[in-house]
Image (cartoon, rainbow, N blue to C red; front, side):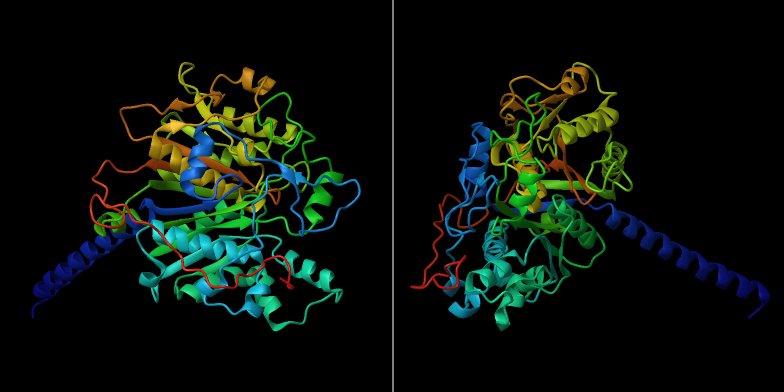
Length: 483
């Protein structure tokens, strides 16, 4: 072979290799920006035991019922408020349905039991029932906090101080929660629990989307929950004047005076949009982009940081390939504390201040309906946002009588005060924020589902399936080991 032949052969091989490298790069870039489909959801919030009733509560502009801490949770603590919006019957669980013996079920934190139910329901809603996902590369990413409070309650109740029961560690520790679900349903993708306080569940969804884009899993369960089983958070919040004496969140109103304690949990099933469309899944909404950051050195460890909130929203918009003017609705963190509301409104003004005066950004705050659900706050906002996009309507915020000065001064931002339709003519875009008192902030940018024929979720066309669960004679008796 002559030198000329060798050069020609080299150039040919180099051209083929370069074309292959370009193709791989294009595939990588496409995967990195791949939209993520929300194909299933489940939730349990005060006054809303499922997704449909949650939307009804929001759309009708109703607030969850407020009452005292349910009997059997913890004893009265002098000088501490015991009011809030609570889930009922967290002390019951169909252990037999999930295959658990009474002794082990009694040692499982009720929050673990709640998440197991929500996972089952979300997979069912997605048209991917739990048995079908066994052995699959499905991730489980959960926001979960104060997990060992149940172990403390049980130890104090029995007067032992510390539990040595072999089931208590795996039933109470936060590190086990995601692993419990992955083990029970035999899911083989990444599984971990994280705690960034109030932003935990939205951070979990952000990381689930990243794991799907990176090819670490093909489906992901993401969400979390919160139940008030130990008095610590009430004592802390009461003695630091964080709880509203009116037992409501007056978000973005001059009467904002703290938050109301709420409980609940939620779960979403995610997959890559291309896979969802290929496999015929119903797409409830699409996550176009997301971002997470930290407040850094703000005015205090738990104080919010306006510039950090601006940054996380802008980076999420950039990740989504969207501009501030594209956003039709934003679900705010909106806790109802004067400091937090002022800083968040300022940040929203910085990001969206260039919008036309006749098209202000509509802002929602689900905490005005169900209270501050702590680690579940992010997933509560996300599920609400998906429902807003699905139904094309924005529910009203509650408990607003006189808008705060920052609202009146900021013409680019308008809190929702009445049920209103989303704009017509194009796919709607929405944002959702969740800011943890840990300093970790998260923001997601969503879009309404593609305008494509959506498959029948279950049953034959025209059928109305009825869901049933055969209950065993024994249920868990969740908050006491003696039930």
